[in-house]
Length: 521
Image 1: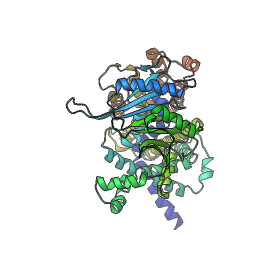
Image 2 (image 1 turned 90 degrees about the vertical axis):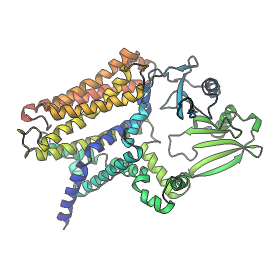
Image 3 (image 1 turned 135 degrees about the horizontal axis):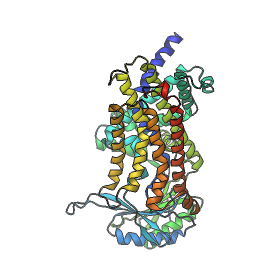
Image 4 (image 1 turned 60 degrees about the horizontal axis):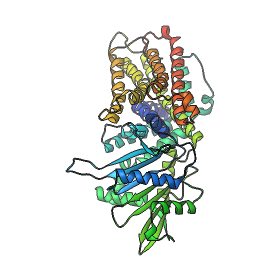
């Protein structure tokens, strides 16, 4: 009975993994990049000048207000962001309301301030690191709800694959320490086990928490039963789920003196150990102006996330937000912080990043194992043999996606700065490259397809620092001297990625004669 059960789990593990494998690979790899979305965003916006010295918060606030008065006098909402560890820049943002007469849509605007001269930095239009991060759950071109449903289904398959993988490998830890080199399929199975077992807690956490974060689509029926169907009823659920323990106190501030400067000073005195991330001025065109102060706390899951100052009955009151109301909401908060690594310092963030890469490698090696088992019975003389076609497409996805990501970065540097819809075309370039890779691998099979694809990857990434230098003047040496660590780390990571791809291409080159079809590494 036990063998029969494990055999059934083996079948389930194989198919639950392969059916959504390419989508899961896309989700894992782009999601992994999201752990450094701020650092990527800095590279994509080379005109921004990082703040390396301590700042005078009051002076920065005054400078930001002056710019906002010029750029967004009529805006109902302002935000002023202060330099933080992962985003060492001063930014201002404001809400522009829709104007049908001028054909203007409701939208947010953001600018960066160069503190060396207090001028607005002329930052290029770019999709930014956040758009790249959102790829793993919004799938870019699809309607939001459809994307959420697809990602939720893929995540369920992933969770099934992980659980069944644990069941079928009863000697899971022994297999983790076993690697048989140059043994063909057996070697790939050992590599797959290493990438699966070493970060297994991460894989389980990231998959389950991802499902929970998308519970509004994966558990929509449960929500509708309890709150009713329709947008208005769904809002009741959102309000209940996001409600926080709030403490309201009366401030000694005078309503007539209430201003961003006074609010900033008061918040610093109340919470001297917390770093202020940004200040918001809301409803500023009305008599009910609200001032928000948000804290940047990466030491754990914060109990105080923000303060809200506003007038009430002739006094200034402060709403102090706390943890979520209800144990379920608190658990959701914990899972959200774990999934996104919101509490992680730079070292833990790198651990997240490496674990995500190993998850991507786990999926890729799983595809290779599945295909290699079936290539023995395939017909190489038939141009569109099912197995050979899948094997070629697998190369287009596994190696083509990193190449497409490299092209995305190239487009940021090479597209004209004043180009219309420039940010959209950065994303278009990524998917056009991915599509071209699929077509090339499908219709032009090459006996060295794996090796050539890896060599293209090995060339694409190391050239990025050179293109960066030729187009912006930034290079490893200047970034190091200027302590621009985000730019320095990005360029260095591109060189390391290129070296790793070259090593893989050389390793496969030694097997070229024994793999004449080129679709099996």
